[in-house]
Length: 242
Image 1: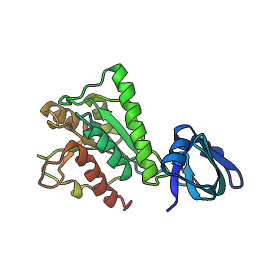
Image 2: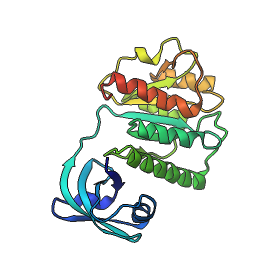
Image 3: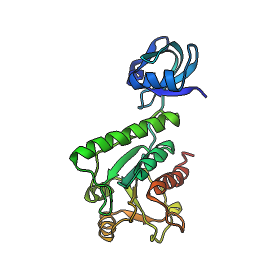
């Protein structure tokens, strides 16, 4: 399978023309992935545009790709969204990476009551940028035409407020109903994953009162880094994505 790269310039590129990878993307292609002149690659803009082409020029400063085919992949509907609680170490980042590989469409950093990691204003900007970079690289590895958007961090109240328009599903080990029994709808699906210590009782109450439903993933208690990706696999099957 050809190597895949992401470049905003792909949006306006057409068959017969060229698209140029620059900056870190060019350096990665030339020095890490070691692409060669004449090698077939694919390039996307992260928003549905999908180009096929061959490398016309290769250097760490710029990789020029001659476009031989162009298509556009429509965004998935309904969308699958992950509200991932901030977690210590790299556990939340592992969740972002795996969720992207498995097809999540949007990722929302959640400052839960029991989150050990806390993001102030400055750290929130850096954290969101870090998560977006992880999602972008994971989308490239998975050959996804769409790179999921990482939104600004939100509170529990903000997640509850989305229950009016989205199907909000809270992953909770004590829930009576399994996630596999959920019937998908045409509404976007928002999966909520708590931090290491679980979701606080008052947060569960707030979310349930707003219209969210609680579901469990089997009989075991999963880590915050694996619960979201596991849930995405389950709902992807139900939605017919897999």
